[in-house]
Every structure is written in structure tokens, then in C-alpha cells.
Image 1: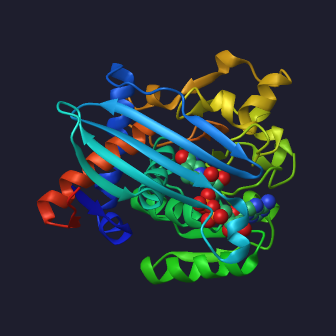
Image 2: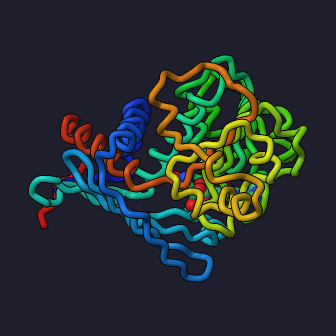
Length: 319
Ligand SMILES: NC(=O)c1ccc[n+]([C@@H]2O[C@H](COP(=O)([O-])OP(=O)(O)OC[C@H]3O[C@@H](n4cnc5c(N)ncnc54)[C@H](O)[C@@H]3O)[C@@H](O)[C@H]2O)c1
């Protein structure tokens, strides 16, 4: 059985990971997978998610936890273990750093969101949340779009500064700036990606501020979590989710649904979009809410396993 650590996982090409996420949407459209709604185990502020999925040559399970308070101790909020097994014989094939798989595949989910929901001439984008996912969102955005300026915001400005410095070292030619405030970041950006653990909207509830922009929410995955003010969903000409389960899970969708701000029929599956080539332009105000799903983990872990076997990465373990 192969063990893949963070270094093995992050050494994979971003395009390989993004193609694997694209493949997950294709499997979704074909109905070629078996994935129950994920199990949430809540313990105070902390959450444990159990995420199994069967599809193609493999099946996988991710056990991932979110401990928002870990950040105060300088530790990552998201941790996890991922297993991959053979879908014909049931034999275990690999164990992987689940946090690293999560960060890469979530970056790619946002990356595809940007590819399908922004114009090719995107000049300025903003990321709210300078943690693990925020950094990954930036890397995948820059895989797809040649932007001039990336604005970064966080409740801890030093986290935003540190992310800007790390990205500047990796992506010369792009200007990385810490935004003075979330409203300034939204005002100056054509695309806004939020990847925070916030339970309240990150910027003002102002329709004028959000009009004709693209919004991607990565963070909120519980009904009590919310990243965007209602102005985003109210103004949105189109609303997409990575899985329809997001309508139950995320406060960014389930609260507006409950209050009648938006109707269930207005919420579309992102998988429908990928049936056509990316349009290369943005029509109006667009909102994409991701909560993630085990099918992404499965296709990304499968691609990583095959990549590692080919490149002889990782450590072989005996059971
Ligand atoms: N959609 C998905 O598939 C997916 C996958 C993984 C993680 N997530 C979610 O994304 C969120 C972020 O995860 P992470 O691993 O990056 O966590 P993290 O702790 O590394 O980063 C979160 C960042 O958000 C900032 N933040 C929190 N509240 C804020 C606020 N009100 N205003 C401004 N900044 C704020 C924190 O300071 C921190 O820098 C979590 O809720 C996690 O569950 C979603």
C-alpha cells in the first residue's frame, strides 16, 4: 500500500488535479458514481466529516476534521486522512494526507469556477481568507487566468501579508496586495473568492457593490456559517453549487432559501455548465457556492495514485 504525504501530493501538476475535478463533474453528469450525503459529526465548534464514494476503478473515503480554533495556536483548521481502494477487489491501495488532497482539489474546484464564470480578460481578483484554502484558491486561479492584481483580505492582516509574500515568490509578474478592508477588496475586484471559517457576512450588504461581479464561496459548510451578504444571492443572475447538498449544508444558500430570498429552482448544478466549453465572458452577477464532495476526493486521489505510481513517489507500507 502506498503512502503519499503533502510533498508528494503538492508536487503533482495543478492541471492534473483540475482535470481530475473536471472528471468528477463528468461522472456526476453520467450518474456513474455512488456517494451518500456526507456525515457531519458536530462537537462544539469542531466538526468531523466522513466522506465515502465509489466510482470507476476505485473507491475512497476521506475523514476530515475542521477545528476553527486551531488557527489561534498557529495550526491548520482542516486535517484529514484519505484512503483509496480497488473497486474490483476491495484491496486497499493508498493512504494520503487528507488535508493536502483537500487543499488541492478545493483549489481546483474554485479554479474551474473562475474558468467558467469569469471573462478571459480578468484583471483584478480578490481573495478573502488567507489560510490554507485561500492560498490554494490563488494558485488555481493563476493556473487559469493571467491577472494583473490579486487583492488579499483576512481578519488578521499579517496572515494576508504572509500569503501575498508567498504568492509573490511563486508568481512573479502578478501584483499581490493586502486590501485595506473587505468592502475595498470587493469594490476593486471582478472576481471575489471567499475561503474563511466565518459565520457572518464578510462585506456590506450592498447591491451596488456586488453587481456584475463573480462570487465564489468556499468556506461556509454549515447552516450557521455564512460568507456573503444576501445582496450577492439577491443580485445574482445565476447561482451554481458544486453539489445540491450545498443547499442543505451552507448558510449562504439554506438561509436565503428559508427566507424566500431565492427559490430552489434557481439553484443550478455547476456540473451542467461543464457540458459546454467555458464561455470566456461573464454575464451579469454570478454566484458559485462550493461545499466540496467525496466524488472530488475520489477522482483527485485516483489521479494522484496513478501519478505517484508512474513517478515512483511515496512510501510503500506493509499492512
Ligand atoms: N468547499 C470546500 O470544498 C472546502 C474544502 C476545504 C475547506 N473548506 C472550508 O474552507 C474554510 C477555510 O478553510 P482553511 O483550511 O483555509 O482554514 P484556515 O483556518 O487555514 O483559514 C481560514 C482563514 O479565514 C480567516 N477568517 C476567518 N474568519 C474571518 C472573517 N470573518 N473575516 C476575514 N477573515 C476571516 C482566518 O483568519 C484564516 O486566515 C473552512 O470553513 C473549511 O471548512 C471548504
